[in-house]
Length: 222
Image (tube, rainbow, N blue to C red; front, side, top):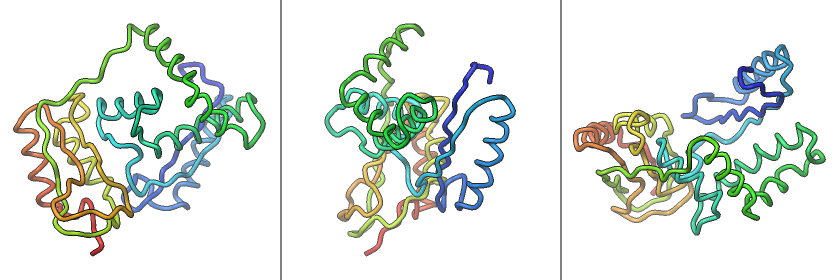
């Protein structure tokens, strides 16, 4: 409302360790949010999405920023789940604003990213706000490894968020978690599951101590 928005798409991830745990709660929340939006004259839609695991690779300001840049640049190995979610949300907004026919938005958004148009526009936005800067890199990193061979059965979003905070995020922009696996992936014993990034050794130790006491943050099926 303060920014003068006229159209809004809400993403409500649902999962066992997401902020919203089930579809019924997500539906109730989306109804209330859309009612507020309507009272301010904002056209809105809500998408109830998969919140069973993190989208993209990074958890933390700089790491998430690197994900965004990788998708916009279409860099080798860019996080495809983030590309898909971004295209879905942007596409719904294009449809809502009447920029394309219903059902055509996601494909249009994906083409805009793949063609490089979105990257050009993003650079122009950054220049208008003081310039594009590279996200900072943490001074300390440590891997959290698989204790055994197995398939990734589940990922605890809340525990990962807590570990990222103990590592210093979001106050320390470079701190956070860098995910190396997704659910369903088969891993070997001692294979890194994720990396903890921290600005100080003490913050890294805080995060690692927490993970040692919550070892099921990434659960494996053997």
